[in-house]
Length: 390
Image 1: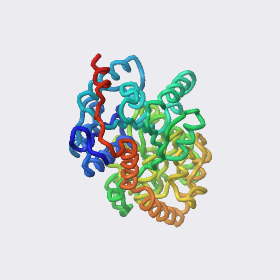
Image 2: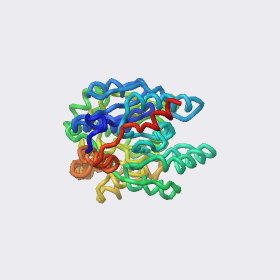
Image 3: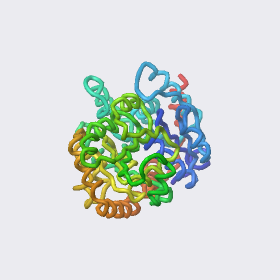
Image 4: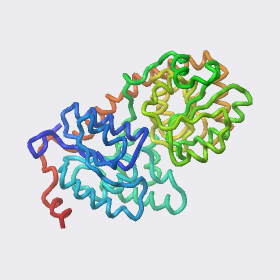
């Protein structure tokens, strides 16, 4: 990778709105790899758990008080980013998710190399006029992204079908394989759930409690699961805006773990991990679960099919928003321990060979090298510095 115009190591600025779960892990993993590779890494993000974790790695963190969704504060947030850009003088900007992609591209406007990574498309998350506005912006904003990085070919195809004229790279998500490994189920489960029968089949769903992740669909199918597996237990790991509503509709066999610092023991404790999302780019939770040797059931949204070995798809994929199909797939695996074990081994081998975060980081580095080129260039062109101060 070329040397920065400052004569020092290349300077990368990551931008993110308030995030947790998968996007936070992607940003953290990329920052760790890029720091190890000798880049100067700055992250503009709101206060929250992500900031101290990044500082602990050695990244420079600059506060950007952005909200999760666009709104009246957008103009102020773009002005904040303009000041942040002038201070940090990056050679390249990498904006993560829709809101940071919106504000970041408005602030930079293509004047320095810009990577936008949607982590699932914004127009899939909303409906009606809001979806139309989101789609219109993504079509217009594509001209200010030198590269749109999608985490699955399906996510890229969704963008193409929507009329987004992007300069695309597809880089599948990866996980830090050394963190995710099998463990003795009963020992882990006893420490996490001492009051639950250790012989009870345990389903675990890890994700933000929100409409995207579809926990409400899983709860709608849970009665049918209990009819065939009466002693089954379900644990929802995570927190979010739908927590209260989900608790109201959940029967006693459903447990809420809340937000946890480490999801690994929950994967290890599970007989089966389920992610009933309504939309994704490529979810990290199934990759993490498979790395722990656990079988998964996923809805067939963007990235799901690509995250699985082909042999798992018939047993492990169901249509989104279909509680009955979800219940049938879950019951089929809960009632067949030998099949679960076989699928768990197969999934682990697949993830370790195909979704190692080191491959992901190197592919992102390749995009950076291509955009920055071999020649030195100013980190922030003179005309850009003048424009953001005017």
